[in-house]
Length: 62
Image 1 (tube, rainbow, N blue to C red):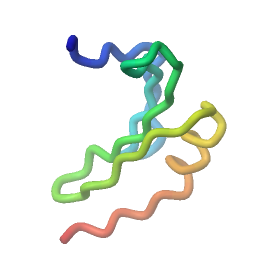
Image 2: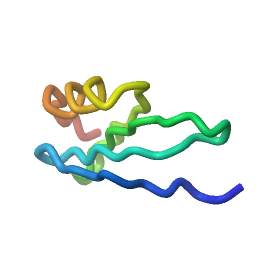
Image 3: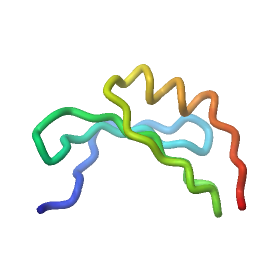
């Protein structure tokens, strides 16, 4: 299986939002925090949901 290839990547604060196709060919949107020791990442079905999660994310490093 090939790795995810993200396109339409934007940054909202420390969170990056990108679009990719999953293993079944469906379009998914992922939000990932790039702050050190923050392990937040999640897949969403809509771009709006991913951007909302990115804008409301508060880092909680462990």
